[in-house]
Image (cartoon, rainbow, N blue to C red; front, side, top):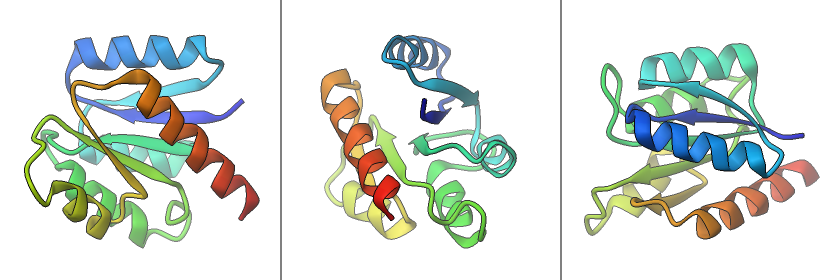
Length: 125
């Protein structure tokens, strides 16, 4: 069973997404801001991280950069998510270290496909 860290400050989004992922057989751990997301990732070493980019304390852009600089979390795939689907956000997310990027509102089937592809890719590495 893959362990997914969901870093999301919106309680409704966090609850909905975590329940749907658990129904698909994933173990889900959560963090509510970027700083705690980095700490939880270091201690739990999830198989994948779904990172909201607009977070309090430490935004998702900076949290992703930090995770990619830490030797123990560097190779954990990260899917950045944002409701601010501005031109260039996907590129900015990839530059920060995200392995993929998705927009909100979350289209669950699309996100699930990205999760499964990244888990398969990183399982082979």
